[in-house]
Image (cartoon, rainbow, N blue to C red):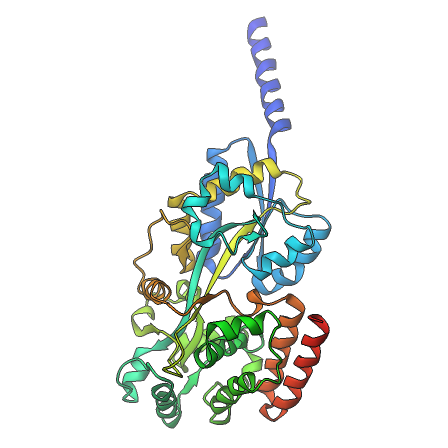
Length: 409
């Protein structure tokens, strides 16, 4: 009995010790849709099983709210891991000393080889501050059945073919294009693509870097091409009333025929609708301009003020494994960052992969991921004003030029 009592005390002591030393890892996650939430729940459970000394506390936040709250977390009570975006979005916080240097993890985990294609957007100066998780293409989702209904033969490859398709859809009483302009970044996709198609990658990146006046005729040409779609009422009525989440059902239910969006929305398409939906490259507008694309990448970061950086690094190493990264990309309708991971056989993912892998003219991140935050915010507000009233274009561009001059002086 004495020996049994001693064993019981020893067991209790071991359990207590395990609880004392068990690490709590806090993770703040932006997500969209049940498929993404399900992936995270499974991945966290698998990490905890492989690392029984770590208890993960995950906070799931809707993506638009997440963007607003992130700065406050980083400067005050930071979680141990945040999900964020590569490129300028990441560099903005690195410049302010808010994200942990992960260069040693890149070396230790072999990421210099397995994540080589996304090392540049993960870097600031000569150091790396992110674990890239996935990247995705942008293009036109469309309803094949609606195209067939109005006699559109094949996917539009040129701007004239695209405008002709819009005209046929409009005449048949179908909204040609859905857009969630209340989320201003959805409008930025239209600016990006028209600019890349009319002016090319080099000019686009000069504009993103504040080196081109917004009163430049080439910038106005982008808005004038966009204005043709607005004047002909090819977008859904009152586009500023819709967010992405409320505009996507218009495509799913067949009330709108097309939507310019990243391939990540494919995961939210119902199985009954997927066979009716196609995905094509944004049309060519000037045959003299080499085709460039947006290819946005997401990542995980460790805040400088994180309390449990040891376990945070273990979590990043776990999530970077090829098998895990491949599952991540499949759940998110994107492409895996790890070049050893399997690419999903999903048709939207395969089309996106072909678009990006065959792009010769350059790959940008995205409007508000390539530009300093203050300028991007003002630019997207200007787009909302322009969509609301295209006659204000000159005033919008004049205001953006004043803003550019102040920011980049």
